[in-house]
Length: 136
Image (cartoon, rainbow, N blue to C red):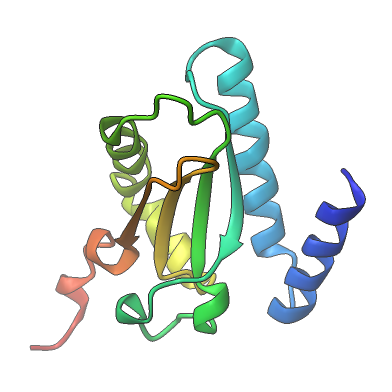
């Protein structure tokens, strides 16, 4: 872990009051690195906290500037929109994981190419399937 990552993790844990966000981001980064090095996924991705979309806020959202769950595609040369869609489908199809992210204060999934600037935002509450729990 480099110094910048250490400081970022420390700030995240101090602002959130726990290491839960740091832990899930670290686990995701290890998994993405493993998928890339094994050849299962052709893109190297890194997860971090980013600014979320205020329109996607829900009752458990953190402050808007810390409510985005960002997946940055590091080797984005020749990145296609279909690859972003495929990655987003992998994340959004897991309702349990989406609910965990929401419980940690995230409201926006951000998938972005590191250098191309190609970016898509997704409202997590749209994929959590919580309609059955609301009183109509």
